[in-house]
Image (cartoon, rainbow, N blue to C red; front, side):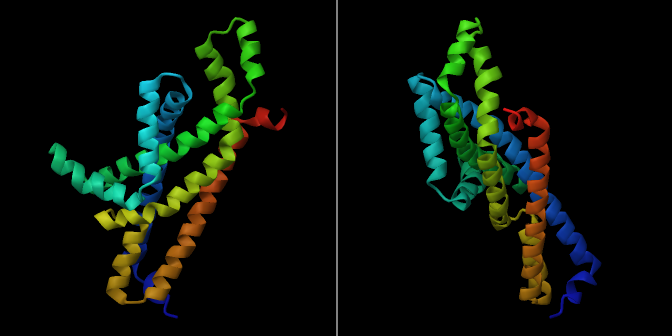
Length: 223
């Protein structure tokens, strides 16, 4: 075992730190963008408006039934040729991850909307709350709280799949490991190190998400 060939080289350590920061930043940004988009998709699929519901259903099923790497290549190489634009590779990765997150998150949220008891909406109507206000004040908070563990798990899972963005040249954590491996040929040591870093980051994400849950949904524990 020659792990010292990694930790004694400041350039390698800096490359791993930069890669980890890129992976975390893209995951957080794409997760937030994907969650906001997922709210819209879930509402469209839950409402009776046929056009928006069909559009949302086609999008969700397309994303959920194609590999992330195919979506990534399409957005990074196909769309620029079709539409005549060019972004930095991290921009393409951010868009692909956000769209991927949104499709999975929307189905989780939609299940949460369905799971809220209908008698609560009936009570809101009896109190004179407008339907839109009742949704945002009663249905939405409960749906997110009920489905938070599933959203949590999906977020962590998609973070762990972000390693594929290295295939389009994004300097993420996996890219850093591949670069170091191509220089010192210590494959076991570098990928074992990557495994530990991914585990550590996943645990940090879980801890941060638990803090958010405890802060935002304290009422859930007393319900």
